[in-house]
Length: 343
Image (tube, rainbow, N blue to C red; front, side):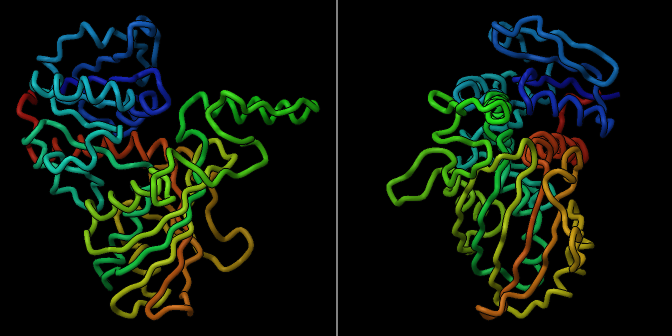
């Protein structure tokens, strides 16, 4: 016997991916309810070989639901996650609203799975930012081996991280350029042309000159992995549909060679090492789409600092960065017997 699952935001990119992953991983589902806003009432989504019609979030009774996977944006989560939790469901939330709440665990199962037990305080577990999730999966085994002191990361983030409208914007601009039309970006998701371009700006700017996306990586890495780690980030949007990439420079307390790091990462949960020192001997976003893993390539020693390494980290942001991580959290709850209403 399985569980009763609700997905809020089932019509979005991440919501649909959650449906796919629940099916692919054969999560024990007795009943699955797809929910969205009233304007999406009746919209059909797929769950395995079944078709579900979306119900209205505003009128749904959650009292019989075991787990609610929430992927409908910050405003919806701020209003509805506490209400849903109050009706007895455990909410696994994909927005940024609850991540830094001290009473809400921020969980990446390969890194801090035991933290799921902290859901009891508010009935909510937070999913990290997509760029943070893949980063800490790669950092965790190396941190255990040699203690990380500082990380410098530059991200190359796909447009799907900004939603379906952002993907449409890249598509339309690219088509337009090929037929000699001027690529419009006024009023779009991005402040500059995204097709055939890169934009060093994700989320809003803060007073110190960093963007909120960059701040999230700092704060979330500290909460998930270790508050002593110093991290600085530059977040860049690139004209890729799906798959985030990161160039990562790491400093350690203890020496760690590239060969040692490669061996450690090969044994690490959730990591696949593809690191041949030859043309094509690395993973790019195109190859990671649809995969569950966080890929690590270009593992090499950084001679400019003591005990330094450099890595290239790639993952499907709609999967590990969002939907997969949420389902893995649900699996942790089930495996630890924390789902009270399981049949």
